[in-house]
View 1 (spheres, rainbow, N blue to C red):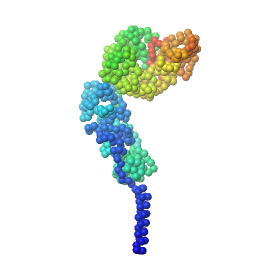
View 2: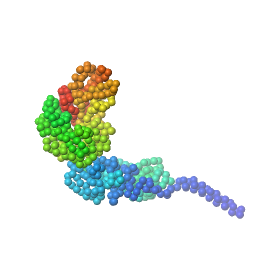
View 3: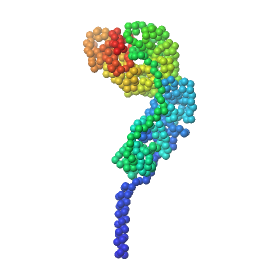
View 4: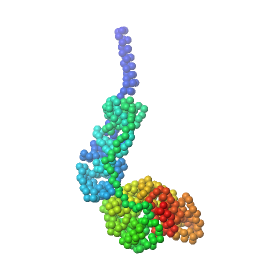
Length: 563
């Protein structure tokens, strides 16, 4: 027994030390074989749900498998791939505008048509409504977009590339595990054999976040991979964007708006233009949308068109939405039928009278109708392009609250984009100020140039000024023409001084418990605006409106046109 006891003690000590070693070292540093719940890891929500790995990163987007084809919701398509797709809830129709035709398909249909009379049937439904979400077949999106997508299972996932360039890649040098996070105790996403190529997403001291060739994302130890190398990816170029043929004037544009409230206003053409200089486009306010059905009131006359042509002026007839009996109309934009009614009415007159262009002045559009509005511009451009009729579109000075007017899309589909560089302070303003200070004009031009080519951009200037009256009751104003303003200044013995910060003459007087302020629009202020336009290389000027100008303003405009 005495001989056996030391042996037992030794064995017990070995066991204790082994336990300590196991717990201290083996358990702590050995590799876990625990399998991750990959469906939860990727966020798979159902059998037909495919989380999207976008540009090698797991995103919040999800694709859907319907039948044997894959779909992405319309908002994701617009955000990630191509925002020209348009869906009308009123028509239950998806559409896409090309330079000379519009492609469209009813929800749930495998057939798509175009306005040129063609019809094609696919093996899949073009778009499918699922609850409140409209899904669009990615194979259909690929007809008009350059991107790639692959799908994988166990777990479901889809990888999408919309951009290409350089990335870091490496090769796995020994069989290993791809883990949820960097650490040997992290759960295993998948087993990765030696020779697998991976994309390096994030490199740390001892681990790297990687993506495998089959779009599995996780962590691998650095020592089990080769050093990374730079690889240039090959872009998808299956789709070639068509050319949007443009009709344009040679050189600069000088477009003068001619306000015509009724048919009798057409008789004032000679009176308004015969003492002007350098006008090559006149824009009479002829067409007004009257209601949501797309009825259009026309004040156009052949005599006016002929008279303008005799004076070497093109006629760009204005289409507005604020002169009808119901005020501002935008609901006509939501329906293909009502949009087409407006377009057909206008284009029939254009063709009948030989009108050279259409100037769209659709105002007061809320964000709710923003996509309907730009679709209207696209559709109108198709018909104008067929007739070689110039399409110009008027816009407020661009700010983030009117982004839905989509200057970028106008810059593609319209021949000219006009920024109405005035109404900085307007009739409803609660404080007195300039109608168009030089900083406001400069901002409008420079901001628009972020979306519109300079050879398409026209800046509108005001021929009017506001007289601001401030009393104990508040602030009010009235708009007057240039000569009327000079008369008011003279009659009230107002002192005028140049305000360099506004780029205008300024006058002020207090009388009869009221203060009158005028930021004067005149030949000097117009010249400063033209200098900004010239410095930015934009294509022309527009003036609102004929009959409000002083005669000497035409000299500075003519100099700009001849520069």
